[in-house]
Image (tube, rainbow, N blue to C red; front, side, top):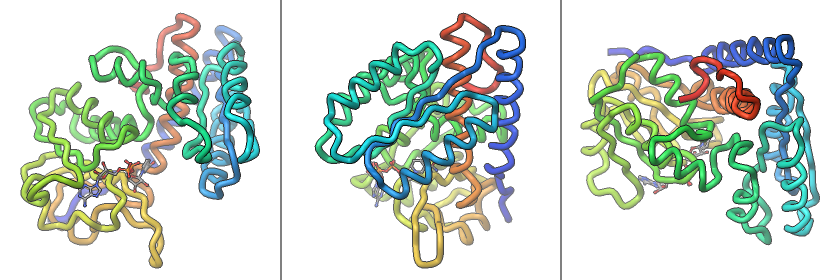
Length: 292
Ligand code: NAD
């Protein structure tokens, strides 16, 4: 069997088109421009690339893009003050503080200072709680993108066996909550899981979010399963995922490539979350299919 490739790049383009169309309607019918503020502390080169690319795409869909770059040694209180100003700014509907933060900052304190209604990363404890109790939340972008692709490929996910490998707060755990919300039977596997290949072989849906190049091989995959590869690993041979694409794609029914799978969906979902936050803030109907 050779798997269907789930083209995240093309899918992300369609999501951005839908966001752009909704932004145009908000401007035309209500005179509102959704705004996204991104805060970058320090000069981590990878974060710099992400922030630039977020700003570019935010503008490309017609939204207001605000960028705040602070020195690595800035006092934490200054970052908290900036977040407070952005919370109060009516032009800003989404706030993202780029992680990781410099060591002297308490990440949890800064994330907790963001107004949950503007928390387009979905990392605020209120949004974590809302998601885990099945209520309307701001949903973390990467798992949201994975779910959109799964829904698009399968339609109804009810009753499917899903294994999420990785239990991080930003990918693994929210991914598991989302799949539970779709009535999947969900297993979260992690570094201490016993007989991992055996656990993964039970899955109709595998989401790999580990950070280990090509760890999941074809012999771990149930024939016909759908494999979503979140991993981004830089190797001497370029970017690779957590899944060994060559062997897994011989067994899976569908698979996301790296690059060109989950990655492009993450920024598209950030834009989707910003437009959703803007609609909620203004009591307007949310665009269809851009959130859960
Ligand atoms: P993390 O380091 O916070 O978490 C990794 C998880 O993997 C942990 O829960 C750990 O228990 C588990 N793990 C580690 N070794 C394991 C093993 N041998 N067997 C089973 N489980 C193991 O990482 P994260 O932030 O969740 O990111 C995971 C991967 O996804 C990374 O490669 C990261 O770069 C990538 N990522 C991609 C996007 C995207 O936009 N595509 C977004 C976020 C993260």
